[in-house]
Length: 394
Image (cartoon, rainbow, N blue to C red; front, side, top):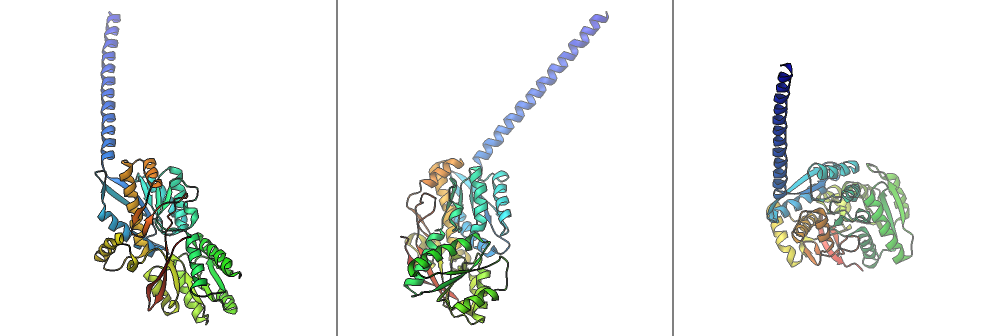
């Protein structure tokens, strides 16, 4: 009797277990189906393009100008492959460590299929290392140091690089300004400043046969009297100031004029911001700098962009905005040609860019994914930036 009862209990427990197991299996199947449906929905949903820029800190003005171009580009092309584009912006706070963290967040949390950034080379270099290691294509919008893309399969840029910029400035100084001597004051810790200074020095020395002395300062310095006293004692024809941000350049120029230095001031593309003209004031009158774009010298394909930019923002486009517009449009074009949001497919499409007509010029990439483009030379007159000439790369 006990044996029969025991067997009955065992049978009931077995049936209950089977029911529970069946329920669990059914629940697991439902969860799997839900996961697959969610994944399918994500695949058919928005395409995320990540953006990291300095919206705060010393380079904040550059970040704001860059976003103006990107926002306009998104208005013009907000969908691709039948799906909406979602742009996610992370502030890199003008800090190298934050730049790397920003890219990691865009990849790991936001699931960006491609990235744009950052405004300066010092921020783009650490960010590019993270993106390249993860196999996510990235386009640097305004970072000109060669190290941003060098030996990095997934990294590209929409701007020219410092060897072109530094050489163009040096040759302009020698050939057009008839300069025979030059000195440089640079930020020893800034990748852009060090790199551009080096390329200018090499080209100037090659053209003149005269040694170019470099004087250094530290990031964050506000007083440059010691360095400028040396400059005054040498009285060079050109004082080249490749500052990593326009604030440093403005302060150096003002203090130099206060000391009675009469050299012609020259700088790179970081000078191309209205804030620099405000900080430098009368001290930078007559100075020259290189940049990527001038609204008054646009190609036919860029005319519509300039008109749309002025209509949206009630001002002329900066070169940072135009380059950022190009960076966004290059990515969308690559996704469209690839017919896919797979990062490798996007990368391959970027590699095969051919005669892309951007706002800032026709783009073809060299072996290091750098566009070969004209360097624009501007002069500051009456507090405004005036087009002087365009220098074609050799």
